[in-house]
Image (cartoon, rainbow, N blue to C red; front, side):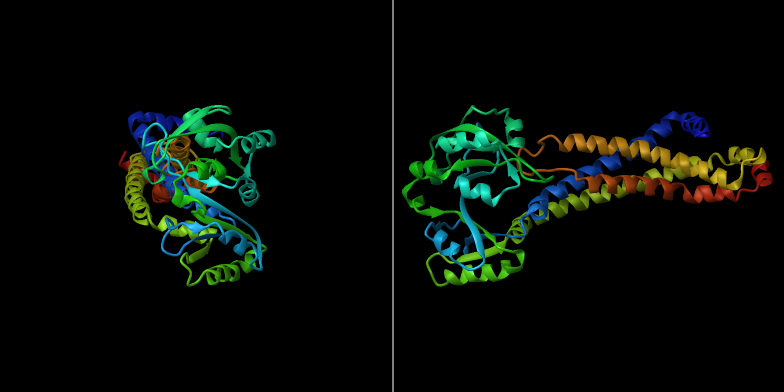
Length: 380
């Protein structure tokens, strides 16, 4: 710590260059944080998927409806512990850009299937007592400023006949794990079947199945598909993580494009930053020689050069990651992608910043350590 004033004095000598170097780190680590958040958003469903849950959809596509009579048949298959169903609603709130997932659910079974979604018991009872009641995620409620008791109208899509559907916010759930989806809008299936067109009667979008153990998941999945083979509503059963991964693949090109462009820009910034820091050290060759001539050991001179570089990296990296975290906390995608910055990404960003600062100054610091005082002062 006693050499800190000397390090700060060196940084303040050319304030513009120091500021620009720190700024480069800020931009680079800000971009790193945003890219990490985008990647986490794309893989969110895969990472938090239940190992003991299966998703049963129509064999043709997710849009193929399945008979509700399948529910009892699935429940009787050995290895199945619980089963529930869901249907996509797809309504519009105020304007089409206000996208968020809307699921028609069977409340009690849905809650048992997803215990990671926590909600106050009193609010849950109010939801059950109101057919037009809905439960919304905490992030979704914050996005639109909804509170318990608010009235929320949605315009139904064309396949539901259009028109306005009225809902009452009866509860707000929150995830108990980082990365849990808090943007969902849960609608009671009884109210849905009352208003939905006739062809929806007795049909659901998909089933979610909880098995007794992850070890039997594949066996149960095959048994479910075999049960409905050669029927008018054949099924395709996958683990929840496989289903989420398949859904992500539909946007895989977008993710790759974003990550590729961002990575190129990021590493370009790091190279420019490293070069700038190396030049700054080389310009002080004579000064380093003076320090060695008054008794500074070779290792201490090298350590000071490295410490100066690491200090710049630490300041710029910290500010960049902080700005990325503040940006990610806002709904910049308007519900299309739930981004979050996991602690592992923050640690990785800090490690990248430190490594860049170290590598950028390593060769100049090594040269300073081996510097011949007489030769350096001769050029002074």
